Length: 118
Image 1: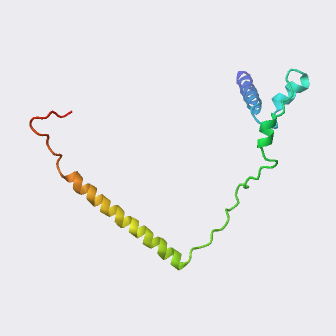
Image 2: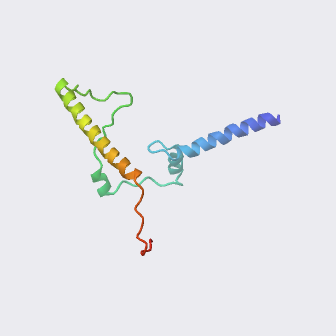
Image 3: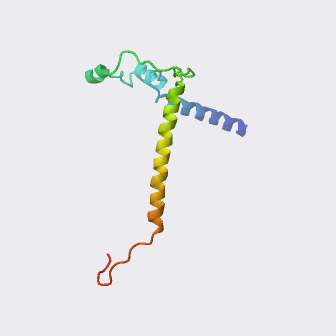
């Protein structure tokens, strides 16, 4: 008997929590609807003019599960051009890396004997 009471209490608690969370939803809000109907709550206020003017009439979303538009494949000449540009960038990066390695392998110059280092 006690376990059955506990199960019912848990179910009622979960139902109350879900109903309370439903109050956070936008257009379909059963908690707000009940409160407005009973006179406890107030009707939602319309958006100010500047807000209404800044919003589009319809919002066109891309439906879930639709594929993006197909992109045209590059021609062979465009691919070779892109490959050569990437090869030039790679070679320039390797030259810079070699220069940095060379500078990093040299010891730091020592300060003259009469000067203090910060």
